[in-house]
Image 1 (spheres, rainbow, N blue to C red):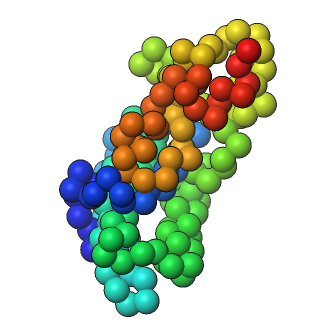
Image 2 (cartoon, one colour; image 1 turned 90 degrees about the horizontal axis):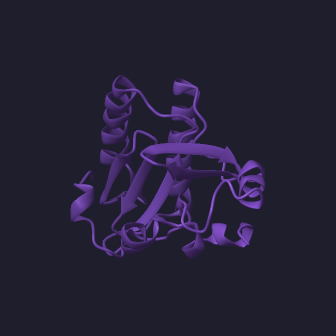
Image 3 (cartoon, helix red, strand yellow; image 1 turned 135 degrees about the horizontal axis):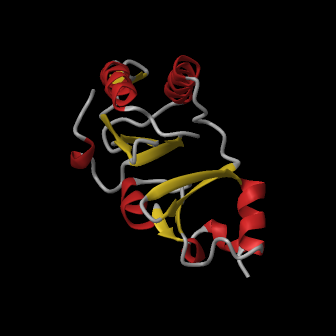
Length: 161
């Protein structure tokens, strides 16, 4: 059951998929329509999953699920992964690779392989103050508070001196 992402409780589970490029306005419209249909029909053992989504910075798909009503099961999580993989194929975009880092360069969102980010940290091209996206947050409260943070406050800090 599709609900407004903003109405989900802070305990809602979140999944964040970062794209290796920005989506166009048309792609965002199309992907939003597809997300509407997917989430409206997303169930776990026949029970509706109260879920919402948002697309941030033309680059991140964030799906939230109110687990107080129904929890995701292995099958429903598999269905969401399959849906994301379909988006990858249809839009020729990478959404599942966790070995990449997104960070801010001014108002621009940069996307680099983890090995490049590590080298940039060593070369002081990024610092502890660089704003990174911590896509490992588990719930909406963490997403709001700890998703977009200085590298020093994220798992990325291990690469900084």
